Image 1 (cartoon, one colour):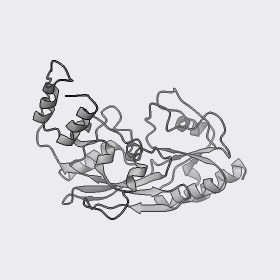
Image 2 (image 1 turned 90 degrees about the horizontal axis):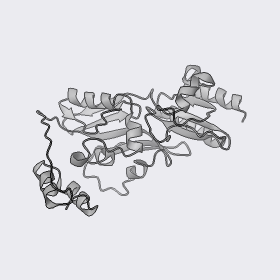
Image 3 (image 1 turned 180 degrees about the horizontal axis):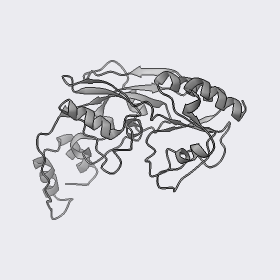
Length: 264
């Protein structure tokens, strides 16, 4: 399929206003520091999972590469197209229009959100329900989106207490490379019904499928905060481990640090 034909077919799926080419597409083809940039046939903005699936099917049929993109806050060029042509070309699939909080269940401490939700908005929505979503990225959380956070298995400033993004997810909805939709939006914590497939997609950076929605774990909202600056003689001594224990860091996190030789 020729470029113009592909662009027209994409417009049929998502609408003319949701497909950018040429100069208007340029900001989405470079990272936010301007260190990485590439070329795309088009930048496409689907509004729901069905549109994502149709776009993926179209690109697969035409050998067009797809670069999934969220808030484009990557520091390593992972969210922008390559500078050289690839097969039938590349499109940027930006999920920013998919920014709905589908459901919040304060009783079950879960919320279901679409991939384009900004991290700050997810945290705010949880707080309004007197709950806490612990993933925190101070510099970028007003701009980064939850789909990208999960696709990169983000850590953030609360990683020692609550774990990586992988530890904060109960279920996913994913569009597979052939355009099929895998619905794994489960909110059950004790789910031993076969393979835990969501972990294939978390941290895979869109190489195995495009995350379109997620069920996130919530926690009780902290009622108070305090900041302390504490020094230890040597991080590799038992003092550091004891300090983490006193701070309420879960034993499994401390065990991970000890296994890596970070603390004794």
